Amino acid sequence: MRSPIDVKSKFRASATTTSLTALAMLLVASVSNGADAAFSGRATTYGTNDYHGGACSLRQSPTGVDPTFFVAMNKQQYGSSCGRCLSVSGPRGTFLAFAADLCDECGQNNLDFSGNLWNAVMGTTPSNMPVSWDFVPCPNPQPVLCLKEGSSSWWLAVQGANMRDGVSGIDIAGQKGTMIGTTAFYFINSNGNVNLNSVPVTITSVGGARTSYTVSLQENQCTPVGGGSSGGGGG
Figure: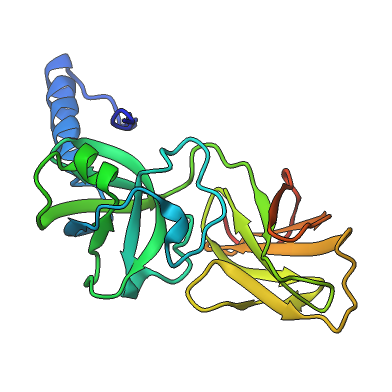
């Protein structure tokens, strides 16, 4: 079980030690209650601890995050959430998790937890509990590009996994990829023109940053790609 995340905050020093101590106490209290989280909703659990069967079809979980600590995201916030890291706060503290699945019936801001994440954050019998959460950068990104089974030089689908931030788009061999259903895979029809030993791939993050790689891809395998070369867009 992962220990609660350490939250570091900076604030201007007060004129006196007493006021500084009081401010620190208020800050700690607000973090422990999830008051600084961007979203407040309800949490449930669907029990499973295997992310591989989720709607995202993730091929790897984020490095540095317990692979059994994942959520099914509500439909309203599902877009580009696959593989993104989350800071999730509840009665037992704040923990890192990641998005791996879709919860069609969950409302805005609501999450469906894996079994282990529920036990860590809530520590109660499965029910419907308040939760505070936010998207955060993944702590130890080690980017890989995964080639979907059935891919060839004529039709290929690529997933960017273990990234720092969420993926909002993938260009493959100079073509804009199309997302496959609810998965994190993007595909192109290439008319046999792609050399799988040297595939240009550009990842666009949710913040608009574009990073380009040229990589040798093998069907149904993930290939580490390192830092890549950065283009325009926001972080």
